Amino acid sequence: MGRITQLKPLSEISTPEINLSITRSAVSMADDQRIIVVGNSAGQLVEFDFSSKSSTSEKTRSRHFESGHSSYVTGVVWTKGGIVSVGYDRKMIWWDPLERTVLREVVAHEKWIRRIAVSPDGTTIATVADDMHCKLWNAITGELKFVLDDHQPVTPHHYPSMLYAVAFSASGEQLATGDKVGHIAIWETQTGRKLGELESPGMYTWDPKARRHSIGGIRSLAFSQNGSTLAVGGIGAIGNVDHLDGPARVEIFDWRQAKSLVQLSDTAMKGLVEQLHFSNDDSQLITAGGDNNGFITVYDLATNKIDVQVKAHQHLHGLIVDEASQRLYAAHHGKVSMWELQDEPVA
Image 1 (cartoon, one colour):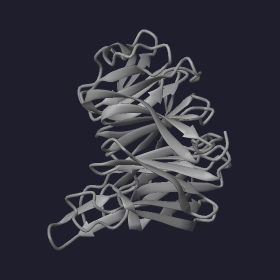
Image 2 (spheres, helix red, strand yellow):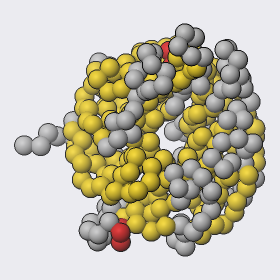
Image 3 (tube, helix red, strand yellow):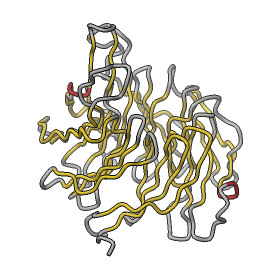
Image 4 (cartoon, one colour):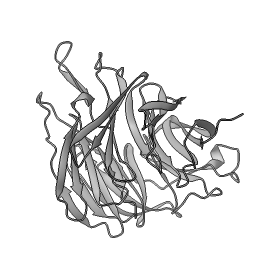
């Protein structure tokens, strides 16, 4: 796969729910196995089939997992121990991906679990929650390995903070966590030792005039494939804190030097940057998110300019890219979608 020059919508499936998280359903996503699993606002996990052999009927292209969560499913990942989901109900649940049944269930945090990530080898899980803890788990046995604490529970303006984002490096040796006020911590996964920290205060807006309220925060994190840089996604300065009317914002760091390299602010596409993905050669960065409307933007990291930008259905919450970087799957308000990542313009 060369440079992404176009995003082509291939297929979409409408849903009555808000789709909040997404993962693959098997070890790989071969061309004839385009099956994804989505967590939604109704507390459900749903499998969607985008394969060429699937029926054109939207109803027959989806299969529900058995009941497990009682509220929003805010994260889901494929691991070597099964599919694992987390939610507003503080639960972490392991699932059999073939039978779509519960294998194991634990109350993993004291408050809302915001995000889950899995190491590239599928053996370690990281979860972050509004109790401000990051926890590392053995994905196969369910054993708790480490509790990583660095994020303050209260903002500088004396209101509760949130721990929104977590991501592993491509090697699996490092982990990053990011909170509401723009603080990022870097960790060594084998020992739980803190390696460094970064600050991105431009992701946080405080309005002391109209009402005592804040918004923003680090909503997504991604290490470059070579591990040298860390991208941080969120939203820029907001005029009206009751709406996501700030510019979509990304900041890229040399995390070892604690040095900000570039800040990318997109006034054309407003809202939260919920997802980040570096291309295989680190030449491009895919960003996605939204406010009432969704977007997918691809940046050229040599020039820091936009290569490709498309509007997507409403707010885009979740995104995965297949191993060959040929297709992108997304979870939106009321829809799941599949896109082709094209490396040549369509004639």
